[in-house]
Image (cartoon, rainbow, N blue to C red; front, side):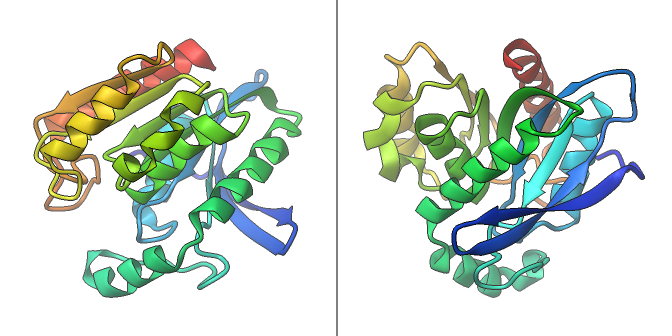
Length: 233
């Protein structure tokens, strides 16, 4: 991932408190830009997530990563070595509230003078499911999910998806096995706003710096994601 020095934090107020989001800004000050909400894996807004924000900023987007775990452990940053703690935080997350938090962040981003008014979402793992739910429940303009975990349990909302949606599915994903993948593809097949892409890789294939990283699959997915965002934002 690309590292840039144009980063900051913003605070978003919601009904029961406030949370922070890391923001990476495009280097081009020439005009407005669309925004993308980057949704974390189970490890919090860590170096990988901030790197994903920098990558999007380098490609002309305002990128904001909200702290989804702020009600449990604000500011937590974990690695794969902290998996037990990360799983506990994931299990304790109220995903409905997380979606509501992200809806508030959409409006916060749209109010930025430098924002074009268009806001997308791009999520990994846990964040992939949140991105899917945002496409069904919020005013997001486009959503992308990388190997979203648990989408197969929320297919009752497939017909409610109105925003353009791109799902990157990992064919060797043990957290979303083939039967679940088939259910997801079948449920979205009739929705003209949604499309799925399958990659020959396992879960977390786009997580740079990890043993799960598969460069060819990540590059392909990332290029398709940039094209998708450019088309819809």
